Amino acid sequence: SLKSPGASAVIYGGVDAKALRFDGVADAMRVPQTELRLFGKPESFVKRRMGVALAHDEDVERARTLAKEAAAKVVPRAAD
Image 1 (tube, rainbow, N blue to C red):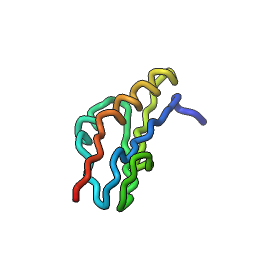
Image 2: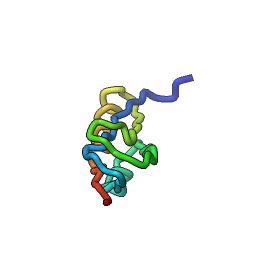
Image 3: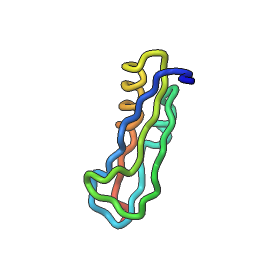
Image 4: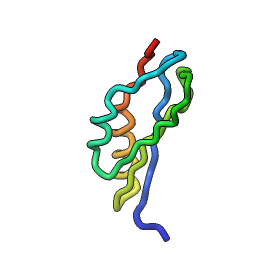
């Protein structure tokens, strides 16, 4: 059964790179009621889905806001 409404927001690669690092992960993890899933893909493209931020709250709109807030804090950067 559903415990609470939830939402997700995509974390895109943002860059074309053979290796990638993520800045802002610690800040994203401080957003309440959220979790991050970074997929561990070896190569990044601008629009490649590299992860998602998940959130839950009593209201789906609030969950969506939290997920977007957490995802926006994660900044993929080329590591090569």
